[in-house]
Picture (tube, one colour):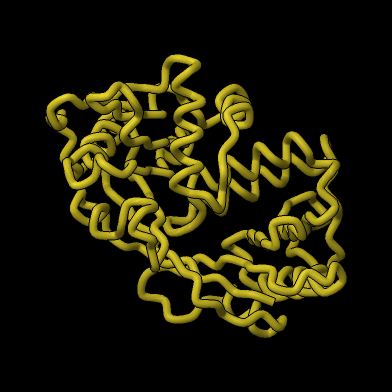
Length: 307
């Protein structure tokens, strides 16, 4: 493989031509212990495979051999930027960050945010230095990345509170209620039932037996949790996980997560990852202390930079 030309011009994504190298780049980024979550890569894979030729804000950097080493996607609608580089080529960080900044300025999309994954114990990463040099500034938004080793996890079936039960998402009416429940807890990222159904049909990492809901004594959803397992890396992602008001501090969500980890372990999963906002609304997702009580340990953080 030739060393990539650092001043190479990125190419627009084109279905059938760039999707293959893009997916390989995601795979390499995912293989890094503190890199992408499987679900995060899967969401992008689903999007790019479906609309690769209709995403004008995305560019891919490749070398003469067709090896992809950088990806940048600027969404002016979401005011967010997403950057992926091959972990073996940290030199790519600067050019990709600079192109991203220029794209944002050209679109006059000030306030656009870019998230940066930084492994635990690292004070400043190359991505952060590159974003700073390109004109980005750090914001107060941040999240904590946690990991659980399935080999050391307590996976014995746990008793659920009286009147509660956990099972996979089954009936069509549960799908609508599941989408509504997630939208109430995460209003910034509302979920539509039809879009969730499309993810169930086309998501290569989606498994119905890993899409869990906890039913309360009233027969309604009390908590939910989605687990996505990548057989190639044997890494899984837990989340989103949420517990509705009136069902908290009863062990409902913890029982649901333990059931998810037990099922993942049966599939040969090595580790499960979760991500928790550094500042959490008490009425939203489960807090950092919840994951720690289940054996998850911090492995890094995600900081957001804005231009």
